[in-house]
Picture (tube, rainbow, N blue to C red):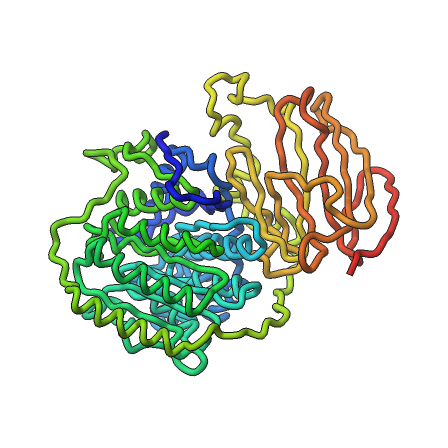
Length: 574
C-alpha cells in the first residue's frame, strides 16, 4: 500500500506497537458512545497499509490486580475484579461508592478490558525505559478520567498514571500532554503535588465534562506550576490550535527538560466527533504527534476519547504511520471494515465550517498566562533518584501456563491464549507463492527460546508478527519478568560460565537439532538480565542451528536439562 517516507526524518525510530485482539470484543452496552471496536478498526488499517513492516507488534501481558494497585486502591481494584452483570445487584452500595453505573456501566469482561488497556501502557513504558524502542504505541490506553478509587468518564483504570509510574522508575522527569477534547483530570490529580511529572492539557472548558482544567489550576506544594491547563472554546481550527500548542510545548521542553514524554491522543477533538465540539482535521490533530516526536525523547503514544469510529481509526492509523516515519497514502486499502469508510474511502478527516469562537485576543491572553506560569517553575528541577522498589512475584505465576490453568474448563479461552498455541502460517506473507513465504510445513520449523530476567518486559512473538507475553508477572516491575523477542541473543553477550546441553529433536520432526546454551551474565546497567528469543526459520537445510539462551544470575537455579550437564561456576562482574 502507499506509504511515503516523511520529509525531514533524520533518523528512523524504533517503534513498538501494542494490540490485543480481545479488545474489540468488549461492549459497554446498547447506545453507549464508547466502542472498543474502534481499536480493532484502527488495527485493521494499520495492518492493511503494511505498517507491520515498519515496527514491532506486541500483545502485552494484561495488567494484574497487584500492578493496578500501584495507583488504585486495593478495595477498588478488588471490586472491579469481582463485579459482573450477573452479580451486580449484590454490589449496589459499592457501585455508588465507586461511581460505577450509567456512564461507566458494568459489562461482561470489564476487568479483562481494564487489564488489557493498562497492560499495554505499562509494558510500553517499560520497553521505553529499557531502551528497547524509541516510541511505544497503545491505542487501547489513554483512559485519563479514572481516579484512585473511582471510575469516571468511561474510564475505570487509569493506564496513563500506571505507565507514568513505570517511566518514573528510570526517568527523573516525565512530561504528560493531553490533546483530548476533555480535560485530563485523573492524570492531573494523580501528580498534582509533585514536580517529577508536568501535566499539560489542551481542552474545551466551560459547561463541559469533567468541569475541571481551569487556567488557575497549576498544582500545589512541590507541584505548584507543574500542572498547566489551556482552556479552549468551541470550534478551534487547525491554525489556531497549532498557534498555541507548538509555542507552549516548545517552552515546556526548554523549561522542564523531561527525559520522557507521554502523549494522550484523544480523537474527540476531531471535527464531527459525536461528543466533541472542536474542529481539528486529521492532519491538524496529527501535527501534535509530529511536533512532539521531533524532540527525540522516549515517547509513549496513547489513545483516549473518540466516538465517531471511522474517524478515530483513520486518525490513529495515520499517526501510527507518522510514528513509524511514513505518511500513509490517501486511498484506504481493502480491509474487514472497508464499508465503514465510504463513500469516499479516503484516509482523511476534514474540518467543517463551524465557527471558531477562539479569537486571537483570547488565545494570546491565555497563552501569555500559561507562559507566565511556566516562568514560575524556575530552572529544571533536580531529582534525587533512589532504588526503585520492585513488586514481589507470586510463586504460582512462575508457571508459564498458570493463567490458563486457572480458567474453568467450561469457560471460553481468551484470544491471546488461543493465539499462543496457534500458528497462522504465511498470514502476513508478501508472496502468493506457497513456496516463497506462503504456507509452511510445521515439521520444518525451527524453534529457539530464551528468557529475560531481572525485571524484563514480558512478551512473546508468534507467527503473525504479534508478540504476546507469558504469564510471568510484571511489566518491568519485578525481578523475574519473562520476555521473548524476535531476535536471538548475540553469541558471547553473556559473561561468566555456560552450560551446553545436546537435546534430541522434537518428536515427529526430522532433521532438526536443538542446542541449549545457558549463560550466566549481565546485560546493560544493573546486570543479571539476559534475553530469550523465539525465532522461526523455514528451511532447515539452509538455516543455522537455533539456540536457546537462558541467562541465569548468580544465586539462581538453572533450568533442569533433559540430559546430563556440565556446569562451570563463575562469579558475575560487579
